Image (cartoon, rainbow, N blue to C red; front, side, top):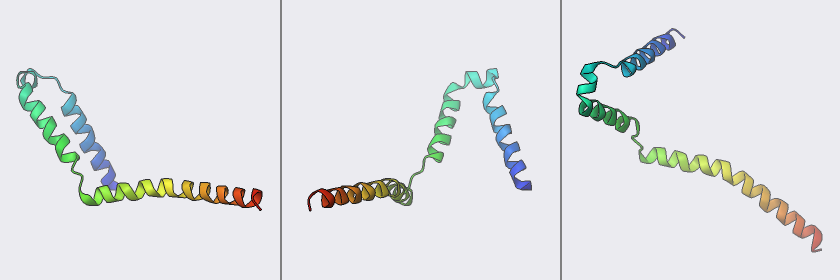
Length: 82
């Protein structure tokens, strides 16, 4: 519980630094854009385990719906095709 406050303070400090507009940052636009690209590329590292987890998540959403549709269709056909 006490560590959450430290994280919030760190996040607020990052937001303040990102929103500061100083001539130093404006002159070196190439450096800031390179830094932002580095930050983005660090955040978007997707490995095989992440892809596997995404596939399982999609199946866990779609599979129950498909099973219900198949069961209802089967019962419907059995009832009317006796």
